[in-house]
Every structure is written in structure tokens, then in C-alpha cells.
Length: 152
Length: 152
DNA sequence: TTAGTATAGGACCAAATATGTCGGGATTTC
DNA sequence: GAAATCCCGACATATTTGGTCCTATACTAA
Ligand code: SF4
Ligand code: SF4
Image (cartoon, rainbow over all chains, first blue to last red; front, side):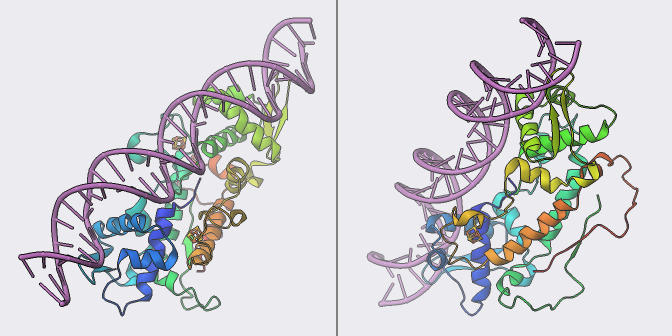
């Protein structure tokens, strides 16, 4: 229920880790997995997914591994979740008109779609860079940002 | 992944339905279920949960059923989800320190907790009344509302 | 050119969760 | 007392998640 999957969770951790090591050309899946205690093979697949969706660049062979495809500032948490878990919907409807057969009679799907948009907006406004910077909790650098419109 | 359970979904529909019929003293679970095609026994349990959490008032016997315990304006979507699905966490950690054994090494749980707060805030700002009023999509009556702070 | 390191990806499995059903019991009304 | 209704625990099933295994492929360096 409204919970992030661990895969997405792992993916975010890995991206953050990569963002924190811009000096290194590439980090292998195993290195990242070991750094956090994430099952290596599972993380491998996650990184493959992220690569397939253009968030990472991979390099096989010795000293190979993964590196961010773009600046950490340009990668949003939303994209990560999207790449790993597929299309983002808080309701069971919408996605291909299947999954919920009471879509016709349902009267709350429209308002919920707005809520969906709002939450997606929140996620879109968070970049990997933001995650990596969470060290200074009291700092506020972007005063104009930080507000998400919710129009029901 | 970040999806509302159908139970919560059903619960919201039912509450909205009750909010739309303030004239009637009580509506039985079966009536509501039939109105939308929701499995009756399942909805019954959901309404029981909502009752137990003080969102509804129930009345057994003939012509019995459920009625909102408070004004529709005073019941938030957040409360509904909380009552039906239990504590609201987008991550697997937090809840009783179990579920995720890499909590110590994890470096993103804190920022994610903020995201969690933000989303909870969105949900808290939506009342059953809001859902019931979704008929007039272009109307904006509360201009000062509708903004949710996101401070990472 | 070959051994070693890495990614790519399909198949599969086990655990957890979500969804839905059944059946018996308690209340209230008529 | 009978019918309608809520209450609630146990159960069964379906779906999703989390995780493993195995093989193939790509790259590097000695
Ligand atoms: S149609 Fe209504 S009930 Fe079915 S998933 Fe969408 S919102 Fe939930
Ligand atoms: S600890 Fe980190 S990884 Fe584990 S659930 Fe919380 S956020 Fe996700």
C-alpha cells in the first residue's frame, strides 16, 4: 500500500552512491552492493534496468561498471521509480484500462488521478543530487522551490 | 509500488457515497456495495474497520447501516488509508525497526522520510468532501489552499 | 589468445501481501 | 421470534515482490 518497492529503494541508493563518487569512472554492481549489503545479483538487474532506460551508462569487462548517464541534478526520483517499477499509478485503474473492472461505475478515479499527479510531481522535484546532499539538514538553498501545487 | 490498495480505494468510494447521501440516516454495507459492484463481504469488513477507527458510526438491525461519524469535511483521505491499511510508510523501514535490515547502512532513509511526510501531507489535505465535490472541475473555491511544502 | 572480470538477461522459486469467501455469533427492529 | 444487519476470525486464492541461478556476451589486460 503506497509503499516504495525495495528495488526502487535499492536503485535510489545506488544512484546516490554513484553521485557521491564522480571521481571514479565506473563502479561495478558488486561494489555498490557490498557497500550497502544489497543482494548483488538483484542490484545487478536493477542497474541493468536503469541502464536500459538511459539513466546509467554501463561498461563491461575489467574495471567496468556503471556511471551516471547525466548530471545527478538531472535525474529525478520519479524517473528512477518509473524505470524500475514501471508506470506510476496509485490506483489500479488507468494502466491500460485493465486491473479494475469497476472503472465505469467508479466516481473517485478522477480526483485520485489528480492526487496521483501531485505525488508524481513531488517525486519529479527530487533529484539524485538532493538525496546525496542530505548531509546538511538545516540548509535551505532554494527558497523559491519546495512547493507542490495540489488542485483537486 | 506506491499503489493504493483496493481496500482503501473501496473505503474512499464508500465514504464518498455516504457523504453524498446525508439525508439518509444510515446505509447498509450491501447497499453501498451494490451501488458500485464492490464485493459485499469485503466492503463490510472495510466499513467495520472504519467504524473501529471512529470514522463511521454503525447501527445493527433492520434499517441499520453506517453513517459518517463526522462532517465529510473533517475526514481526510489520509485517515481513511491509515484506518484500512495501517501506518503509512513509503519505505520498508521505520515501521517497528523491522522489515529492512540495512537500515543502519542506508543513507537515503532520512530524505525519503521527508518525502513520506510530504505525501502524507497531500493526503491529509484531501477530505471526503473534496472527493464528493469533484463534479465541477473548473471551480476553485479555496485559493489559499492547495500548496504542499516539500523541504528536502 | 586466453584467463578473468563484468554486464545482459531469461527462468525460476519462495515469501509476502492483497483480495476475496465462509461461517458462526451478536444486536436491533418489527 | 424472525429478519435484517453489524461483528469478526479463519480460511482460500491470486498477485506481487524479493531473490537466486544459470548461461551468454562484452571487454581488458597480461
Ligand atoms: S476505478 Fe475507481 S476503484 Fe477502480 S482503481 Fe480506479 S479509482 Fe480505484
Ligand atoms: S532503510 Fe533505506 S533501504 Fe531500508 S527501507 Fe528504509 S530507505 Fe529503504
